[in-house]
Length: 129
Image (tube, rainbow, N blue to C red; front, side, top):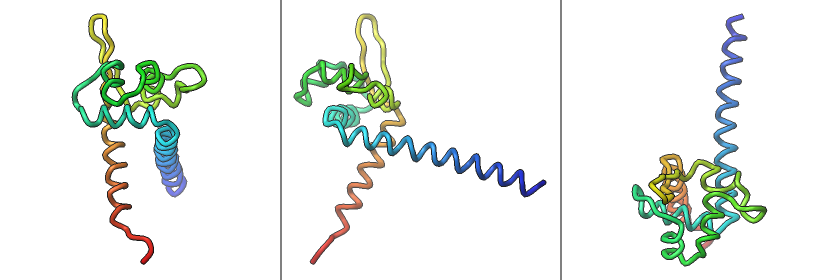
């Protein structure tokens, strides 16, 4: 009986770890598949903790504001809502009177910092002669 309770707890813990791992894979795949999402996320990381609005983001990264909105919120079939930065929880909406601003979430910030660390680590590893 006692061993059975531990096994159930271990299964729940493994399921939780698997869910987190699956979410990270989903986020990484989504960023890899969209230059717009990647550049918006990196721009918001660069200005963190400040927020910005789509036209300003577009001006700074030289992408049309409608495509910025697609990457942030999703738009029709081109930018799926579940793969959007908001849908994945990487960006928060900061509402103001008559304007909507976007800021990188804590989750998004930590994920991008992890990606930067991983990229720096792979640069240190030399392959070949």
